[in-house]
Image (cartoon, helix red, strand yellow):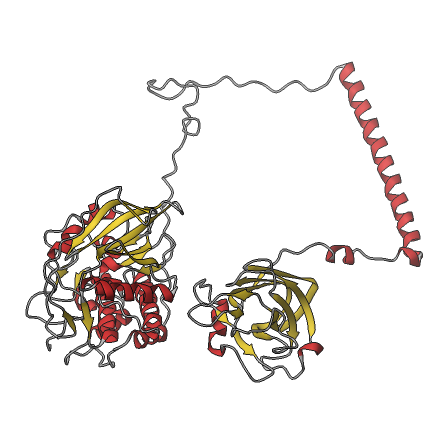
Length: 574
């Protein structure tokens, strides 16, 4: 097997690291543990992909717990001190929340690049990354403030517990590849994507910290940044499947591969590894002549890796396991020991049999029997008379046409429990021939709050008609004709000017105009969600969501300030 470049990840000897169980107790920050940072060597790797600049010794500013930056950020605990910069856990006293802070002198040779990287990462605003909150140069210091996630767990801690299940590993590579593909589309690279840079929240979502900033702090660069990040994701997938690091050196609390054997497929390292994920890891790690087990082409960019993941059959989570019920224990009464002393030996003493009461044979008994018989006869007679009276009333009611109504309508008037309707597909509807974002229509029903379909930014508003156009919309396919009663719509931009209406249409490409369609419901939002309810159910297969007004929002990374809106999630009930 040909030699491979280790440019994708840092291969540091972590034999002196703290126990991983102890690391799990530490809160998640953007700085690595002290021992890992001390073991890391900023040297040029074998493949030449990543290069580090020589950095003279620089004294770290004298900071201490309790020191305040900008009269706002109070430093609490130093988590990293390395190569002229330090990382701290701090408190934002203005917003009363925990944050992380990187600090380095303003005359540091990397200060300019760190500021530039932090400000570029802050513009991404992608929830899959730990967000940069502030980047400031003040009082001979440069500091970068970022989110602090105390409830998230590092991938290092997760791998210490053992290899991941196939579904968890699938989610890991899927979310990381999609996130890094989005970052590279904006011109941002990570270059230091290690197990310590990946966090998993309590909801199962993976988040990446240190985008662009970690590499700038350490002076790391790469000639092929997309290839570097792709190989790093492959190394993380390899570690998740095998609990081994895919290089000869031990790193991040994981044992490396045996020396001299080269790259071994994960399913050859550990039994029971998912074959498709094993080959995917090989395709991401392939380099300098090494090939995957099925000779598939290598994945050289995060986007290619994300497409390869989406082409795989979806891996479902394992079925939940339930503990078997305890063995049935017979009680002392069921065992026939009721009334017996606990230590008494031998069979229980026979209980005396109580004889049944004697039959009523006396004079009083005979009188009582006759009285009971008379009462029964009277009851039967009264019942027969009531039945006959009911039958007569029924005949009169049947003959009267005014009383011929049935109770079916009363039964139909009972409210039915709403049932969620499954969306089979979606397509943007642009009758004027100028769509907004056709390829993102599917993001409105993928149950991912981080993805959405957005409109363009318009200078006239909030009503689109008549200055801009009649409206913008999406047509949803429910698979078959269903009774549509309501819809819940999650919006990205708040405000009270989002007007949306639902229409029943005949196909994904309607032949008629919106004005001639059957309206299901309409409404106007007062925030980031809108609930539309029909006056009565409308039976249809295709539903048009038609937006005619939208609020004014500030500039973001996709569009300028103006009247615009984005839809993150749509659900129908019937």
